[in-house]
Amino acid sequence: MGTGKPQPVGRDLAVGIPLAELRQEEPVAGQLDGEPVLVVRTGDGIHAIGATCTHYGGPLAEGLIAGDTVRCPWHHACFSLRSGEALAAPALNPLPRWETEVRDGTVYLGRKIEAAPLSPRGRSAVAPEPVVILGAGAAGSAAVETLRREGFDGRIVLVDPESEAPYDRPNLSKDYLAGSAPEEWIPLRPTGFYEEHGVERRADPAISLDPARREVRLGSGERLEYGTLLIATGATPRSLDVPGAGHTHVHTLRSLADCRRIIADAETGRSAVVVGAGFIGMEVAASLRARGLAVTVVAPDDVPFERVLGPELGVVLWRAHEQNGVDFRLGQIVASIEADRVVLDDDTAIPADLVVVGVGVRPETALAEAAGLRVDDGIVVDEHLRTSDPRIYAAGDNARWPDPRSGEPVRVEHWVVAQRQGQAAARNMLGRAEPYRDVPFFWTVQFGVGVSYVGHAPGWDRVETEGDPADGDAAFRFLRKGRVLALATIGRDRESLREELAMAADVGDVPAQRGA
Figure 1 (cartoon, rainbow, N blue to C red):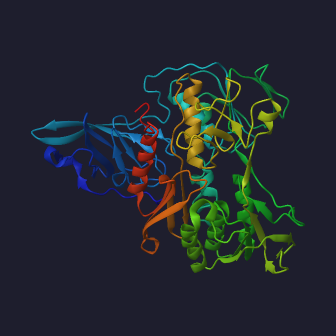
Figure 2 (tube, rainbow, N blue to C red):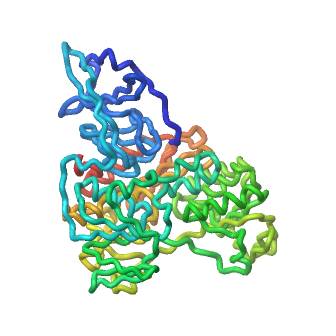
Figure 3 (cartoon, rainbow, N blue to C red):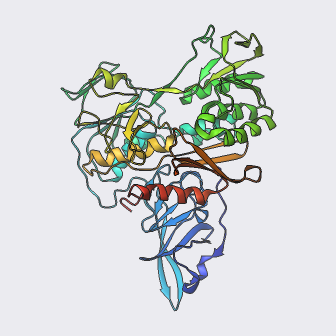
């Protein structure tokens, strides 16, 4: 798991590959004219596509071949072997592919075929117009791209008060905050991309929704009529209700602007207090420590991540932090924040030139609730991500949908989940009627310890462990009544991918086969 782009490796494909050496669904990595290529033999032929994931350059040869798809080992993006199309987030761009020919028992590569990012590949699609999308985060931006990729050429209006959106939000607490990712990594698309594809932008907040009139009112006073609407406004960070929480050196992290303010304080500060030992808090702690600050994490938990990853894996990440100089004040809460320090509930004072609060988020539901849509810890949607109004969909951190594995409504705050929901919602806005059944996935990297997590386990009665995290090789299975609800792995990327497929098959669906 990482973000660097691997160099071309493997055999020189210019001289071909003996057909007898190509085994079914066993990828062969090579290079042609210095470009990495993956050659795979499947039941319907021999395919040659780019060998590096278009998300962050993951080595696809180390991923998993499943039917006519290949899945990235790092962040579980999925591509079609036949077309190179990016079938499932987080990858957005397709892979190049090459024509193949078998002559005298040898496979040769021919013409290279590039595909445009939003090429509809001859498809056409319609939806009630205009399509209005509220929110340009993971779900909203993925929905826009899917509409165009599926062949919809009608009017799309993307509404988001952040003029810089969409951007790679997971990187804000990881490499970008740590100072190891350049600014150009952050935007998901270059300037002018949406204009080029006929998408109208409104850098303006949506302040009211009238389903009867099918109308959204913006902060500027503009009224937008819609034929179909997607609410993808995400969630808002929770703040602390303590004296001093409003000081300018106290931050939450959700937006690019938030991250830039934290970086500005980190460049002049020497000490930081991070409130919260969940994913945002611990990733921020690791990133600020990488910048050389003295970092203290304050949380009421006994073990970091215990509620999500369990105590065993929580201790692994806790130790990684302590070994890299992060201090912890667990089992404690913040009583007040002063100009240069944080005071805890036992009157201990901790120096703090900046404070980052990571104590969870609340879904953005006010707009939907005021409009009379059904809300219950999120905007309630059906299996097609449709709200209680059939013309309105919701996706991402603010959507609560029926989980096909547990049979219970769930809301999951992960980037890839939001992206894939945006993709699914877009297809259903076009009349596809495809149930959203993708298995949740997320990843985190802290001080070189990379964890991949598939599934969803809000509670469990047993955790099975294998391997040794100290060797970078471990698996943690979260079970309830003997059934695996989730799997967290360190250094077992293919096992994580296989488990994702197994979980999908458990409900009769294999993700990303659609449209392959």
